[in-house]
Image (cartoon, rainbow, N blue to C red; front, top):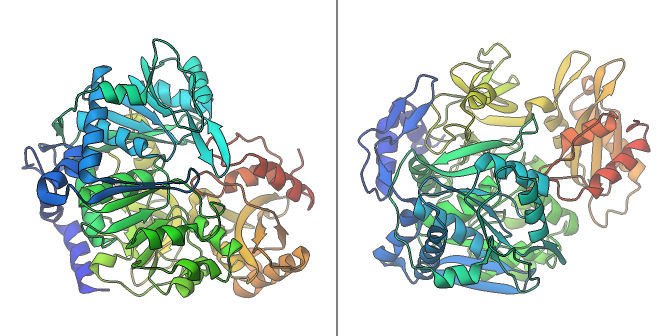
Length: 632
C-alpha cells in the first residue's frame, strides 16, 4: 500500500478530530466549528456540531469572490435536445440567487422542504442549489417516476413547493411529466401549496390556476436572495431509496459533514483540482448525481458536465467519447452497466478512435459490482486507470476505492481496492464476529461513520436504528456480502440477499457472474438463485450477447455452464443458462435480480418503482418459461 494512503487511513481512524478538523479548513465557515466529532449514545457521531455555514456559498459565491467568476461551472450537454450550453460561476450564482428569491416569494424558508421532479436540465441543479442557499431541504425525485411513488414521497417530505418540468426526453421519446405530477398531487395526503413548472420548448404543460407558476415568470419577477446561515447538522437534502416494506426510506444528508467529505474526496479519491472538468454520467435523481454532478465539483471550483443522454443511442456508443473530447474532461465517472452497453454495441471500440480520450486521466465505475471482464475491456480500450469503487446512497461518498489522489495501488480485478480514509470496513459472520481474511461474510462499517454519511432517516429514527444498526451492535450494516483479503483489499460480491444456499453451501452469485462475463461473446449477465426441491436453491444464468456475436444461443449457454464447472467447480451446481435480449434494470442501471428471481419462482412481485422499461420483465418471463420456470 502507498505510504500516503496508509498514513491517511490510519490517522483518520486513530485521530478523527484532527484528520477531519484539517479537512474542514477547505470549507468557508460562517462560524468555524470548535467540536469536530461528538459520539452519540447509539454509537454514531455528530460532525461539526457547533459549526455554521451555507453549502451554496461554498459551491458558488466563494468562487466568484475568489476570482473564478468567469470560469465555466456547469456545461449542459444534451444530445436528445441538440443543446450545449455553458454557465460560468457568476452566471450560475446569479440564476441560483434569483430562483432562491422565487422560492422565498412562495414562502419557502429555512427547514422547509421542496420536492424537485425534473429531467437532466440545468434548472434541476439550479433548484437544488437555490434550496441550499435558503437553508431549505430539497428532495429530488427521479423525473418520470410513477405518480403513486411520487405521492408517497410528497406525503413523507410534506413539501411547501414542488419544482417540475413539462417533460423529459428518453432518447427520441418525449415523456410528459405534468400529468404524472397532477395525479401524484391528487393521490397525496399532503399536497404542496405551489408548483413551479419549467416549460420546455418540445412540450407545453397545462398549468393549474392558483397553484402552478411558470418557472420563467417566477424567476424573472424574483429578487436575488442571499445565502442563509445554517447549522452544520441541519439537513441539506432528503433522498428517498426504495424500502423493503414498500415505504421509501428518506436518507438525510447534513450540510457540514457533506461539504467537508465531498471536498476531501475530490482531491484525494478523484484527484480533480479546481479548474478541471469532471464528467459524471448519471442523473441528479440518484445519489451519484447529487454528490458528483452537482455538489462535489462545484465545492471544488471545478467544471461539471450535466449530460442529458444515454451511453448508447444518443446517437451511438461513441456518445461518451464525444463529451470527453469536446469538453476536455479530466476524470469520468459512470456505472458499469453503461460500459457494458457500450461494449455490447461497439466491442472493438472503433467509435473511440473517432474522438480519442483527450485529457482524460481516469475512469471511475460505481453503482453496482464492476465485473472484471468489463473493467479489463475498458482498461485495454482506454489505456488509462479504470477504478472500481464502492459506496451507497446512505454513505453519500465512497467507502472503498483506489484513491487516485493518494497514489494508485495495484489493481485486483473484482475488488474496489481498500477502505477509504474515514471508513473502518470489517467482514462479520451472522453473530457479529470478525471473519478470517478471505472468508465471505457481511460487510459492515465500524461506528462512528465518517462525515457525509447519513445521520438518520427522515422522521424515522427507530427505522434507521433497526435497518442499519441493530444487526451488528457497534457497526453499520451495509447489506452487502463479500470479504476482506490478507492485503486489506475489500471484495464486494453481492447484496446479502443475493447469496444463495445450494444444498447447505453459501455461494455468491457475483462470483459466478464474473465467470459468465469472461466468455468472449457475453456482453452482460446476471445469476439468480431459483427454488429447487432437492437442493433448496440452484443458480440460473441470464446472458446478453454482444452485438454481432453471431453465435448459437444454446451453444453459448452450454459453454458458460462448462466455464463455471471448470473455474468454480461442481459445488456451484450451475447447470442452466439462457440467452435473453436484455436484462431488466432500474433507471440508474442496477439489474433487478430480486424481481427476476420472483418471476422464475412463480411468486407475486411488486413492479419496482425505478424500473427503466417494464416490458423487459415480460421478455424475461417468456425466456424463463421457455426453460421450464416462471410458472404461476
